[in-house]
Image (cartoon, rainbow, N blue to C red):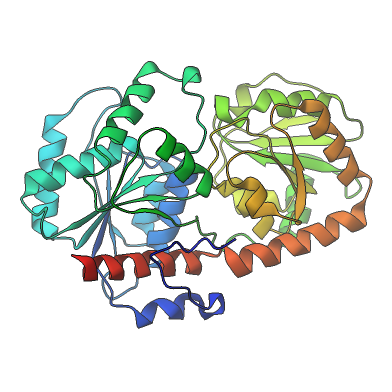
Length: 389
């Protein structure tokens, strides 16, 4: 899978972060809706933290205040502001504040992350008077969303973004599935590119000592088989599918972590942890990882984090999951709890296969989807944008 898009220049993946030094550093302002733990939020945090010591480090503007990823970004010394917006409320003052930040900091590039932030970045840039001097990129992160499961405003928001999609200089998706979906929704940008998420493989890695500690904390013996997932409770994550599958298995312990998981129905051998801030450590306590999503995934962070940790994975065939996993795990249809239960039991009964798949998964993420590759892809994109404008 060649994720570096048509306008990008291919680069040796083994160059790691040194590869970006050959490119002209550019001042980038990232604008995101909020910084609670989620796929886009985590990816942005990973990206800017890795660039915190660059000659021209990035800046971050969040529409909403607070969030777990905001603290990570601040702790890394990255410049950051929030516009103190509230969900569901228009805020002309926030647009003016963003325009002022753009005027004062004069970024060469503005990168939007998700629909609300894309629109705010567009409005703030026009109001700042720097539209001809700053290259604007929008970011789309989901694929086949079932908008019927969310507020009606999401449908209208997506339509509005589609109508205005020719105004930014480029739109960047994190998956091929996401690009296909948004084209079908009417997106017609000047350039529509794909840059995958990047995983910090130093942060997410196998750790035998962490495994011992986590399993002791969870009350699991070395011989217990534990499978789990890390995701917020949301219709797209389809926890009902996973819980149904676990209920069809025997001698399997389920471990679920993420915002809202503490409130899911209890059942035998299910450990509900709620939101955690030690996911890299927690993953090491598992024997296998499940991504049970029903729809909407573009490039799944939780899936690739588990692979980087050296876990064999089972994923539903949504978004780009099959392209990411390839032969490093098992694929099942979405919303098919029988197929998911069967896959879980296959891995339960074959420790040698688990070990092999986990090693292959780690190597795949380290080689193709590390944070260095994502940084390089964005730097190439920004450099080409500078040449275009």
